[in-house]
Length: 246
Image (tube, rainbow, N blue to C red; front, side, top):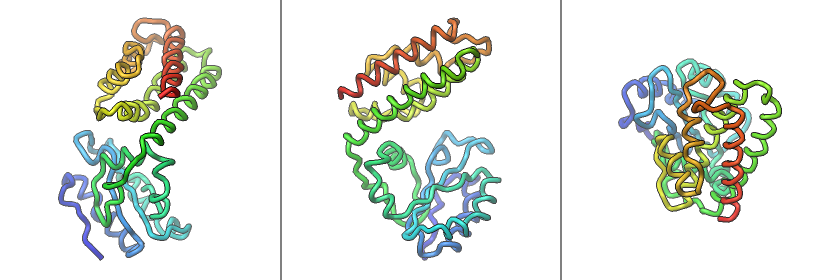
C-alpha cells in the first residue's frame, strides 16, 4: 500500500486529516483507488474552525457494507469539520462526466491528490455537456424561484432571503458559463458576476447589489425588495433564453 501524500497541506489541516486518512485506509485497504481533497481547504480561502474539509474517496468496489463500516470514522471526522466524504465507485467516476460536467470540472481544477490515482487530471469534459447542464439548471432554478416567491412573497424578509439564496446557488453555473466563452472564471464572486454580466448581457447592478447587501431593513440597494425581485427574475429569464441559443 502506497503512502499518503500530505506534504503540500497546511500543517493544521494535515494534523486533522492524517489520523483520519490512516483509519480510512485501514478500513478499505486496497479497495481504495484514490482520495482527493477539494474545496476551500486546498487553498487560501480556508478559515480554521470555520471552513469544512471536503474529501472524495473512490473505491474499486462500492457496496452498502463499505458505507456501514465507515460510519463511526465519518462521525468522528464531522466533529472536526471533515464533512462526510463523497464516496464514488471507479465505474461511477468513469461514466458520469457527461452527467456531472460542472462538478467534475470544478474538482479537476481545484483538488489535491492525497492517495492513489489522479482520476480527474486528464479528464476531458465536453463543452456541449456543460451548456446543456447550464441550461437545465438555470431553467430549473427559474421555475423554483417563481414557486418559492409564491411561498414567501407576503414576507418581505423572506423575499430578500430568497434573492440571496438564489444568487448563491447560481454562482457555480455562472462560472461554467464563463468557461463556455473560453475564459477562466475568477474565484471572487463580485468578479464572477461582473464577467458573466458582460459576456451574457445581464444587468451587473442587479446581481452585485444582492451580493453586497448587508442590510436588514427589507430593502436591497435602497429599493423595495419586491420591485428588485421582479428585476432579478427578468435577468434570470433573459439568461435562460440566451443559454438556450448558444
